[in-house]
Amino acid sequence: MKWGVPSYAGGAYYFVALATHVNLGFSIKGLSREKIALFQGSGKTMRVIEIKSEKDIDEKQIVRLLKLINAS
Image: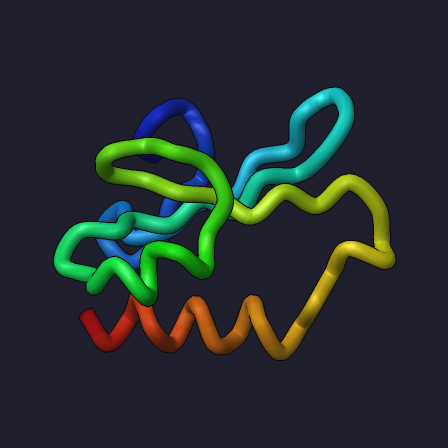
């Protein structure tokens, strides 16, 4: 466990439940600027998708991003 939360694929992505939302965090190492723009936040090595309610879940987008990260 890296960062005190479950991480997967050698730290390429993680999820964490916070008080007001869930973060899906992704390593942006080796990604192009266009691909990095798909994520929220301004981290230098990790970016996130915030899910504040069930309506925020875009399953197709999440699967696409997981495939993108796994292909890097």
